[in-house]
Image (cartoon, helix red, strand yellow):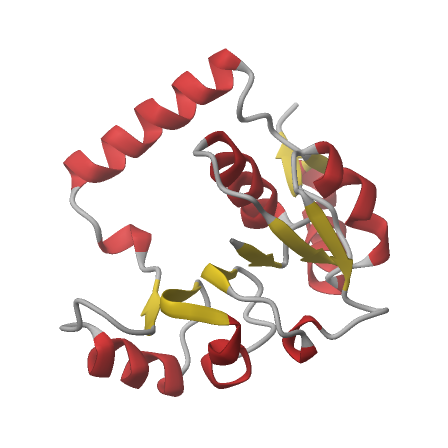
Length: 173
């Protein structure tokens, strides 16, 4: 599995869950996140400022682009014959690709991960699983910075800067 944006909020969780499920994870992140994602269990880490992972010849069963930093077109050669490209940031191109490939049982597919559209029962099960993994120590929160509510504008600026590792937390007094 290739995780693009591996040191952000969603990426750090994705790396940990994939490793827990037995996947060999290659993580793509900026230089600040290299040690972090390695510590989370990534087998290989690619510094996006030093290497364009889409120029590689490696093949993956899953490419998860949590940052919307790439595209299906740029990553499709990285997919195995039955590989899946997942993205959390929808675009017209990936929406079309999702519709075009949704009925396939074989072959490369593109998928938008609209997790919020899943049923309440599915989301509840996901939360129970996340809680269990947290209790077991297989899923740990990664917090970049905590801001008091009075500094929420600064918290937004920090997130918009795009170089955080993990999540930014807003606390209430």
